Amino acid sequence: MSKESPKKNTSILFISKEKEPLFSKKNRKLLSDPLDDNNPITVQVLGICSALAITVQLEPAVVMTMSVIFVMACSNVIISLLRNLIPNRIRIIVFLVVISSLVALVDEVLRAYAYDVSKQLSIFIGLIVTNCIVMGRLEAFALGNGVWKSFLDGVGNAAGYGLMLIAVAFFRELLGSGKLFDIQVIPQFIYDEFGYQNNGFMLLSPMALITLGLIIWAQRARNRKLIEKN
Image (tube, rainbow, N blue to C red; front, side, top):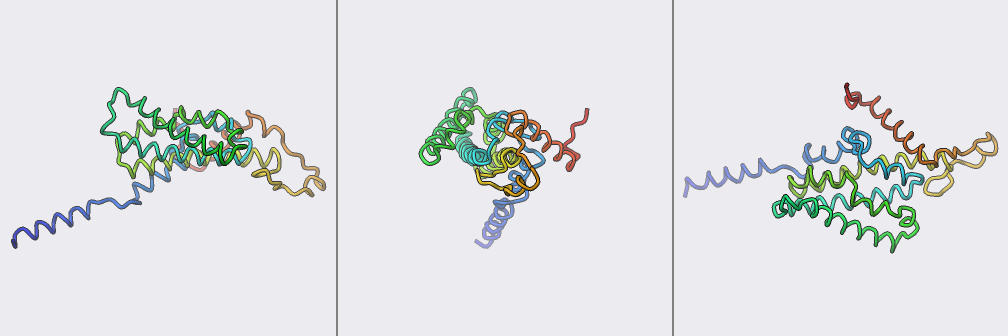
């Protein structure tokens, strides 16, 4: 009996020592890296279409961000739970079934509680199904990692994607209409006293690309390691 107890204690100590904290440095990087050094839009250059199409106003950009966070977090968790049961030959089909089910749920909730925004986003909510960011994280991460890490990866990449949507929409709506969330932000006296005029070009699609390009330039000017070498 006396010989067995030290062994049992050592085993218990070994387990507690090896167990990784929920928010360890490695896990925190899953959340923080997509916000800057590995942003899906500005670094990986994924999901550009929606960044150009739904950033005229801040409200649809925020709703789209919340929708993608929900879909990515839930789909990553589901695929991680099923990763040992999914046959390799049909994994893409399984991904599409999971994502499309979650997108349908989001679409119905928006139609019920935010119909005007749902109309603004129109087909772009449905296109989350084919968003290469969502599919890419399922294939590259959730299929080979545990539930908690997959959840953090999904939230982090969706937040990084949403951060760029919100940043572009902020500048386009503010400079294009003088409003944010359809509320007048630039005071009327600036128009009256200084002759300020809203820049209508900011509401056109090309300005979304230019605004995003300026954000990418600023990011690389601040973080030189992101500059690609020829």
